[in-house]
Image 1 (cartoon, helix red, strand yellow):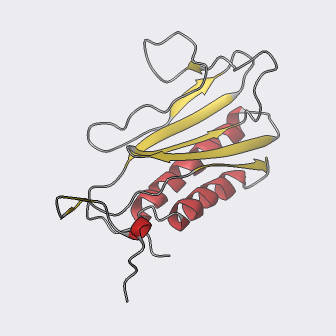
Image 2 (cartoon, one colour; image 1 turned 180 degrees about the vertical axis):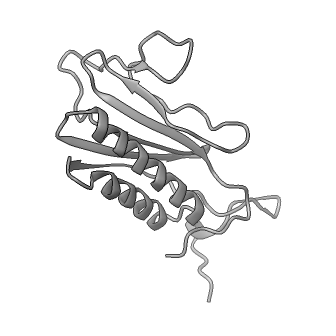
Length: 167
């Protein structure tokens, strides 16, 4: 028998089904740097997103993206701990991997958008750029003047009618 719980019902507008409900979450996971940290972070991203009901294909793509970001950190950062960060909202999913675990004692760190051409001003907090028009998304790279790295992306929700991940 199907559940009638309001939070599980698909959103509707004038009787039209708009697609599966979009999970709302904001979480971070920290791990020590190790030989297979990239695999650990990518697997954690996939598992957490699937458990939250994100469609399987999107969870797999974002998990692969997290693996690539963590591999970049392993090759370019000497820091001992990394953080996976995932946030969802009505527009999509933001995912980032960073070697920065705390804010500066003097306030927010200045993040320099390395991968956005033509931008030279510092951001108080890095923000993944929007997905490309063709639905593809890539990693944005930010760094602080003291060498912290942040790689992140934003992926839009799939079109209505895409089934959520199996529990």
